[in-house]
Length: 110
Image (cartoon, rainbow, N blue to C red; front, side, top):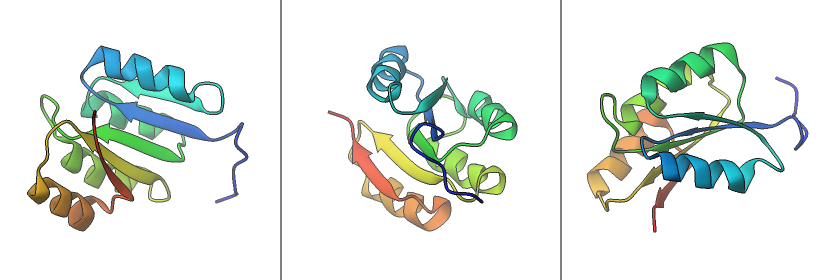
């Protein structure tokens, strides 16, 4: 895979809270191509159709949780950096995310 420049880099943000999606989109849109999805199924469709450098996913979402989604995303985008965000302190989810989904970072929501 070729190295991307900052202007070519894409980020996928997955969160079921529209206000979080909008805030993160505004934060990253000047330097990255930003894709957003309100859940795992929509995000998987985006990953099938677009290359991304970073996947930023919430842990607690309806349907498939963040760890399960990130684990599945490895098959579609093995080179992408995976970051899990959550509003809940859950050490087991953190361990699970590292072991199953190969996440790069685990971030708590403010």
